[in-house]
Length: 116
Image (cartoon, rainbow, N blue to C red; front, side, top):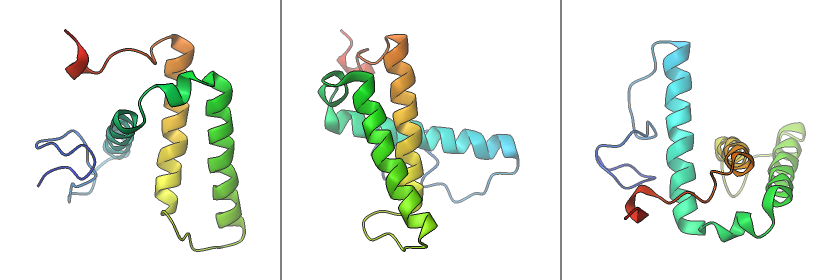
């Protein structure tokens, strides 16, 4: 089966895996692989200007939006209409990774396919 996120086979993503992790460490590794795969796929779609245009403040604003949505849904026990809560947690983790990459000066590195 081709990965639903990165459209590759085989893929490091565990999104389409059917086996459950057997340890805390394996569960953590699978989630990190999932977040990485989603983040890479979204970066291909968005490009880098959505982050570089506003920098770290833009990331903080996006994080705030995601946290406000999450807080509203959970606090008021609302069933989400547009995306499941797990997607929001993925986005929050993704923005945290983008912020760390931005702060370390690694955000504008090329994708593997773009290296010459």
